[in-house]
Amino acid sequence: MVMSKILDLFRRPPKVKHTMEDEFFGTLTWDEDYPLGWCGILTLANGKTSSFTIEGAKTDESIPEKVREMAKFLIANERLIHDKIAASMSEIYNGPWGGGDTLTPEELAQKINLKDVSFYEEGGGELYYEADDEIFTDHMICASIDENGEIGEPELEG
Image (cartoon, rainbow, N blue to C red; front, side):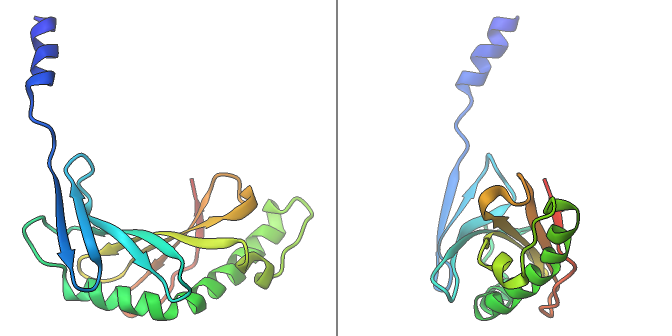
């Protein structure tokens, strides 16, 4: 009985990985083993890249216009968003996290990078920044962004 269940696992077809070419986003993938939505790489205005997912999008649909608008907004304004997040997080670092060390917002801005973005199908999303030198140990900095481009208060996750 157990052996037949094990053999059934090997007989199952592999999960499909879909790809789609998009004029703005380039090549997008949808991995059925990780079905959050379309995934890809976003190139920011400073030349750095960030991975992204489009949550809620279906494999048989085109990319929602609100997602395109939010991605364009993020590319154009990521430096301002980045600096705002660094200013908020420097207060946290200079409090309990720094252990007596301090960082100015400008110094912290040099140490964080946008690592991942989750766009919501209806607009808005979540921004995830990674800090160099493990200044927040293994935590990511997360901030929500609404469909109007307003940034929520950043928090540590992880």
